[in-house]
Image 1: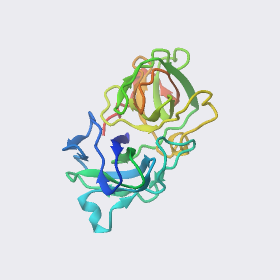
Image 2: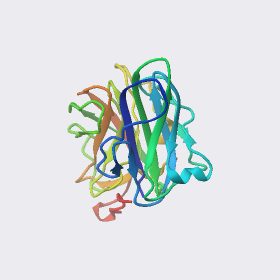
Image 3: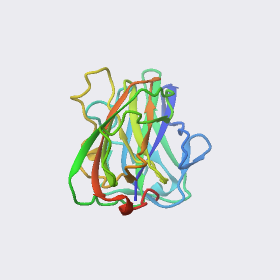
Image 4: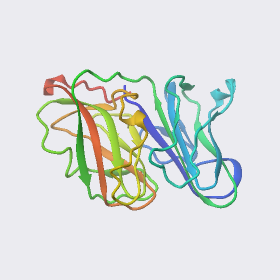
Length: 266
């Protein structure tokens, strides 16, 4: 089962304590007003990210967490964008359960000035172990312009290196770069959840930079499946209207077209 990446962003957040961030429009998770998402099933919180130039603390807020306490995001980032490598709260060994029908929000405490605040959560019902086989990094490039501060589609017009041999592929890693990049997530054929990663940002040359290793060393298992006849596309979250994108998708070929798992849902 694929995992899902969801996001929050509030522009020009003034100093304050436990301020709810605005939930980004998301085609997968239903929003609760403007600040939260309401899952339709229990989800495990796998990882979390929060950043702002004046950030002091950030936490995940959901009613069911009061059985112990709200989940603080540690480490967090006191900067506008993810660094390379980034600070990321990884909970894979002891994931926290977010209950169905209970709104999930993110709250930030800031001081000293006004700045944008961003948060991301990685959630899943279950993770799918990567299949055996050779793993290949495939490169893509896109010149699609994105709209700043929202999930924006990017097609891989010049993508996935050379034409792929016919077959079925499991995605087991992703890296994406654009100048103002915060995150990128996959849109998989027939898929529901949208698995994603923290992006690499800044001006070229960016090639020495990398995101967190959970996004390419197998810790998250299978991101999703696709056939060579229907490759995935990508949604990007950036702080600027970028029109230059590069990235790599790590794949394992698992068989012919008839081997498609159709496992891109929940």
